[in-house]
Every structure is written in C-alpha cells, then in structure tokens.
Length: 270
Image 1 (tube, rainbow, N blue to C red):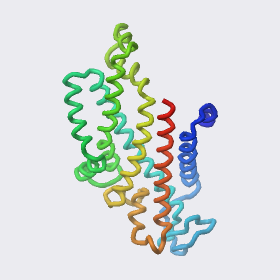
Image 2: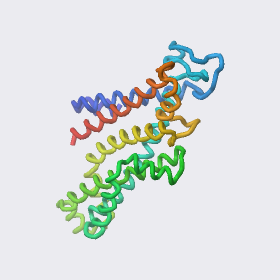
Image 3: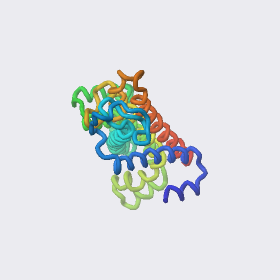
Image 4: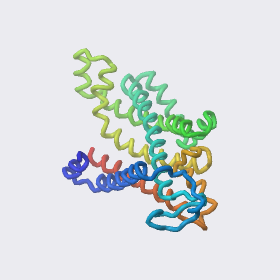
C-alpha cells in the first residue's frame, strides 16, 4: 500500500514501470513458492509435455515443470544478487566513508587500491575470487560481493568528499559529535538518494554476472539452480525445446529491465 501511495504522489513513469515489472516477478516467485511444491521432483509420465494450463511452459526431459523451475531460479538469482549487493554496499560504505571523510594519506592509499581493482571488470575479479574460494552458491555470493566493493567505495567516497565541506558537518563537529557519529548519522542519510540508484545498478550487474558465471558452469550447483544454471543445462536443447532457454532468458531480461527503470526513476527523483 505504501508503494501505491508513493506512486500516486509522484508522476514518475520510469519508477512506476520498473516497480510493476519487478513486483510482478516477485509476486509470481512468491505464489510459486507457496503453491508449486517441489519444482525439482521428477515425473517419468510427464516428460517433454507441451504448453498447457497445468504447465504454462511445458515440462523438461525429467518431467519437471519449466515455469516452476524458472520461478525457482529467479528466487535463487535474486538471493544471490541481494547477497552480492549487500556485501558490496556495506563494505563500500565503510571504505568510502573513511577515505572521503578523513582524506589525506588514508584517502590516497584507499583510492589507489580501489582504482587498481576498478581497472578490471567486476566479472573478471569475480573469476579470480571464484578460483580461490571454489564453486558453489555461497562462494559465488562472496566472490561477486568482493568484486563489487570498489564501485560502491568510489561512489561513497565522492559523496563524502562533497559532504565533508558542508555547514551541517562543521556544526556537528562543533557540538562535540564523534567522527563515527558524523560519518554515519549526519552524512550517510544525505547520500542515500545517490546510493539507492547505485544499488539498483548493482542489482542489474549482479544478476548478469551471476547468470554469466553460472552459464559457464562455475556458479551455482544443483539443486540450487539459478537462471544462469538453467541456461547452461538447456543450451544443448535450444532447437528442440526453445522454452527451456526462452523462459530463464526472458526472465533475466525482465529483471534487468525492471531494476534499470527503478534506478533511472530514483535518479530523476534526486
């Protein structure tokens, strides 16, 4: 209800469209979670069925409902993206806040390290960490999260550099507020608008990075099949059973589109 009231007060087509797409997918995932049962259960009598009311996308060679598996894969992909962004944002806020607030030699050292890491694509950094940590769902979340830290740290550092010169920061210092209180109570709330749109972009990148790594076979492992893992499993049947590929592929596109529109809408609200 709060979302509906917000949209009524703000005429933001990007935000409205993004929320409709994203919340629609989340609703389907929730309904599938509540009513679909075990989506990995095999049924020899239902192999390779076509589209029907019972199976909107048909079934695979093991008799599993494709639509149910796509919704399950969406849930896994969103959980991985959320974990990735959480690690990147929390670590990036701490690192960027200290660098931007204190400046000096600390800022120089942190900035050089972040710039060196930022010179490499996030997915390439993630590949390095996956090779060190191994494959699996939680290893993938940790690897992607670490790889996303530099981008969030740069954004937060830049905002803290600007905010540190503001009058309200000087006033808080004169009132005896500690450095940590100034950083995370006074400054952080004032950079949340920029941070929110960056988080949506981070979700996009996390969904795509997870899909790419899982498609290459170095991401999630059964039974925790993500959308990328489903694409990897179905690539040998793309001509015989296109829905095995189209289902997770279109869902990835909708997820990215929804988060992109939300991010653009939030940026216009700033």
